[in-house]
Length: 380
Image 1 (cartoon, rainbow, N blue to C red):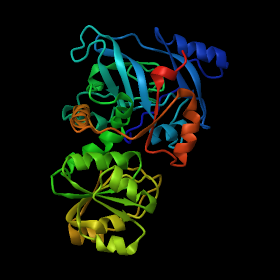
Image 2 (image 1 turned 45 degrees about the vertical axis):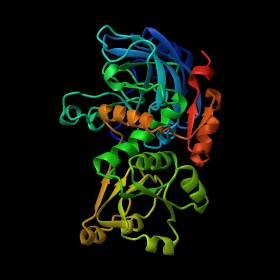
Image 3 (image 1 turned 90 degrees about the vertical axis):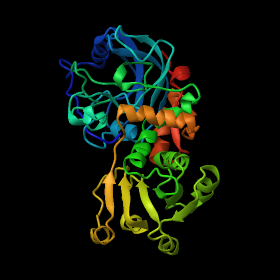
Image 4 (image 1 turned 180 degrees about the vertical axis):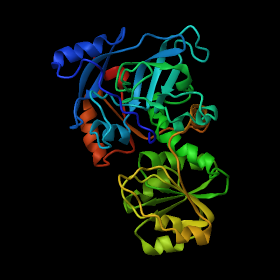
């Protein structure tokens, strides 16, 4: 999840302690014992970690974690690539599980429900963003891991056996969705669904480009097609053409460095969803847009991109961004996915394979999302 990152301060009295004492402290911080896998330093290597979760409050949902997707954010945070990670860090914000307990004032969930938790577990609930169901843009948003909760303790993510979350930040997972393949929708899915809706690129008959065919891109193709949109995949990899057209159902495929292909497609698209997180030129994508077309960035390159202004002026074109979605829209996205049988293409892995998976993710060696089978492989 791209958005406001809150850096937790170290918990009191932990500095300079021995590892064993620190571990015991994490275990005793809250009443409910929990286990997970955590990164301990910038190497990003994950290992078993014993800690604790808070008691189930009156508005809280407690869930047994069954599956958790691996997002690129998890890799960046584990390695402190953005400079705001604190350790130990338990990643994971594509979480699917089953409710095992509810607080006395919980209204939307009951024990046994299949549920999901995405990139945030708290917000101020009173600002303009929160009042407009855009909690993800709240300046006080609390991200699912590596942040500080209202009680001052660190948030730990879904690479763990249990979660305790305010019901407002939990979504129902319909029975028709495969739980493992639904997990990545909670980050990758909402990250592309929200801009398709907000920027009006969801009208049948429109032509939308999807730049990059990875974890975000392959789900963007599925959602756009289900909305009735003509979809063209734009990729640097010619070998992804068959996959895009035959498996994902895209209508066309462009190799971004093939000048003839790109020239022929100039001015043909109502919008482009750019999922690429590597450094790349955006002028070729702007050139694909019709007059008043929209380029929407959802990937997050590490360095600023060069923005060519003249083509925007003469074509009345727009460059925008989008980061996840609010809770109401996340539920809407999940329901739309269930209705249209949309899930991510995943590789299901065991918990102890996670470090190898991270190494492969770094090399983009995954089609298209790793999901950890927490429920069956997390050793307690």
